[in-house]
Length: 301
Image (cartoon, rainbow, N blue to C red; front, side, top):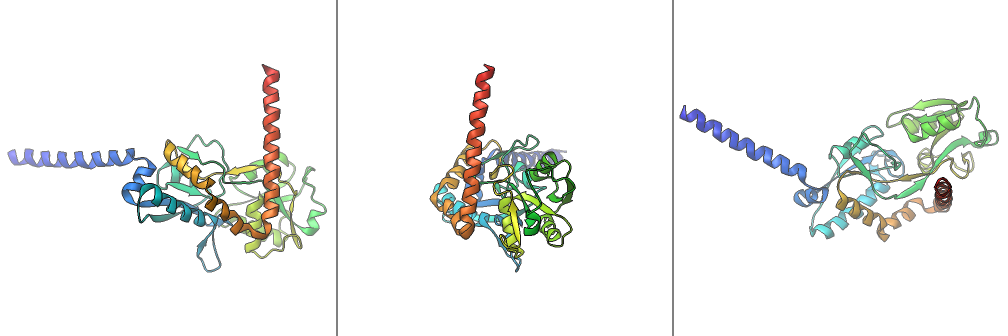
């Protein structure tokens, strides 16, 4: 009997240390966890050119990888570590919020529109990119498809469960939405456009440009983005675990760093003027909306 009591005491003590350690681990902030483990865990898309994608050889490429490299160097300086290892996770339209909410990753980098997602315990970084919804059409269709009209009976491809799908459905209720999904959804949608199975494909302009480049489409020659200025404007932010103010502040400081800003020039090169034009349009639109909103608030007071 004494032996049984002794063994039970050992087991209880062992469980106490195990659960105590787990509880302590759960209380660690993101920066504390990285400092303790020396590991940065990141979610990156494989279907979102130029942010994260697989090249023709199957290698992971993208702007987000360059950003993570800069982030690692900044972390090494902040935590005074010689080595920070990186573990990459494949993120998608369907798991990106769970990865951060469940603390599987320390951040998710991709074309994520900043918005309220109350069903997940996440927060967004400050904006690191500004874009908006446009339609990719053939040059011939560009002469007949008028985004200012109703687009009645126009077959428009969209990615399921995206803000683009919601916008197009609301703005063009008389259009025929053809929905694509999965990691290859955008690629298959543009292939459908090339095969004349749909009339247009709607997505964020920068993602359409990226996919067009991958599929060797000649923008401005055979295909075009309409309208010139996007239908709406969306800010992209990194997805982070919630309730980590120090991590959020640190990530924002990296986004603002000159080395991070230089990434865009390296990636966008010749199309940088068009991207800057869209960003200026969206910034002006946002300022105008804020002015109008403040005016409405004064009228109601």
